[in-house]
Image (cartoon, rainbow, N blue to C red; front, side, top):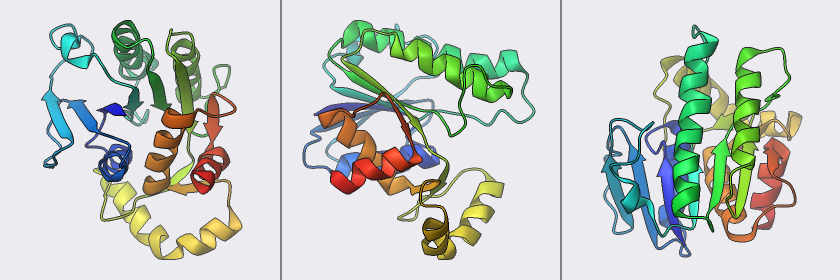
Length: 221
């Protein structure tokens, strides 16, 4: 399997990249982003591209892939709806449309979030929901929307956001307790990557996977 990864330098993307490089079924990973991952591996190739809204200069290099894991995302805090829509809906659709054109047999996995709802009251939930709906309409072989709640980074992976790093440092030692109390609300960066690979290989019963579904996929992978 050949994989394209967007957002490989973020916390979720780092976890997904790690699992891709460890998976014997993955023969090649192409990381596309505005900055380098800093990693070296025989499977890994990187394209540094400043304008991800316009992939036309590199689109010929995006052909021949079986799956795309789209892990780009920003917090909506302090952003207008127009600005958040541009970096969420517009960006995901720009990438999705290009890849659907070049790889119609591809499986596309989009990282959304718990609480996403196209008709919800929260601005971010509406935008994410509209993004999910639009991606599901694209002519991919399969498209899956991941809606994780809390994600614990593992294997030395760290968030680039200081507040999140503090929260994860506190949560980490207590993860077994939180998992026991809220089994359907928490997952890990490792499970996220493994679940994406599982649905890319075998599909899933439904196109939208909440945290409990993500954890269930990895327990049967």
